[in-house]
Image (tube, rainbow, N blue to C red):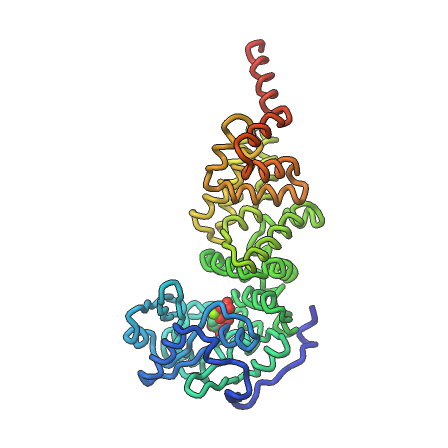
Length: 439
Ligand code: ATP
Ligand code: MG
């Protein structure tokens, strides 16, 4: 990481550059019809309406945008009047969401920096509420990075660039608008956003923007865990989870999000937990690029597995039987994690199920494996076992057995059960039972 003072200072243009339709690659055809509908209805009602943010940035890069964000001079209430399918959301940052089935178009009213009017609340440099409205030339300075502050104007199909964002898109550069330290203090989540965009787009974070991150990483402590849950999902489910993970660790942000995981990784940098996580993140990225669904619970179950295992051993050392130790460890690890990142109960439930099934996958005698195949978490638990086997944290024989068993016909399944190595756990239990009456 370079020192901030080494940073090349790139001045902002004196006035907005208008890049005409003929000089950029964005075409109306690449914008979703829902976004166009919203843009045109706003325009017809006499408001300004521009595409902004990730949509413009990604289209310039020939990447399919995740969503389309719209900026307008219409107030949220005025936007709501125009669309039946519209909901106003957010207290901190009031927005209109226009719903078209599953697609949501986010419409934000231009923000301004004037300190006097409107509803803005700042505490210790952190913006807690920002609902002061203005015009486009106010709004642009409230945005985070130059590449996110480009406007596409449907009135003449030009791009409006106040901050040299087009040049930064071309150079592959994440650069803050304004003083980076101040802007990170206003909203520490911007540190995570910088990492997310750098990883997703393969951009570099310019030196002045990256320099304050390690010292300010601790500010994430002040962010509500529910907001961090949203951000963590975006970080790890955007198709560049591995890159994101490496960068988060490099900048000291990962330990703010997953302190227990960082601790176990730090103890065993080159060891199994690290490889396990890397494999899981690679798998996640591969699945996303193939368009397959991802359950966030799976990722969390991988992340927290090693801390959970360590604590299980601790509880066992203190005399708890295995199952009890695992339950206590799971309770412990999950409750510490949700204090940082508010994983909803519907996911923590699945995390526990995946963990519990790891034991049950070892019992392959009798009717048990058939029942397991019917379990609704079998698939996730089996995927988890494959990962463990891949990094020698579970027997390969066990993973291979399940791979074959689930698709084998009845006869082959029976043969597979007969051919199983003797069940050690059964023998142990048997011996114990014999001992008890003698004691
Ligand atoms: P994505 O591809 O994830 O949608 P995006 O850049 O569109 O990326 P959004 O979270 O959809 O990001 O936000 C839309 C735009 O709103 C951003 O491009 C940026 O201009 C502005 N914005 C969002 N969050 C912040 C923030 N925390 N601080 C400043 N500006 C923000
Ligand atoms: Mg967006």
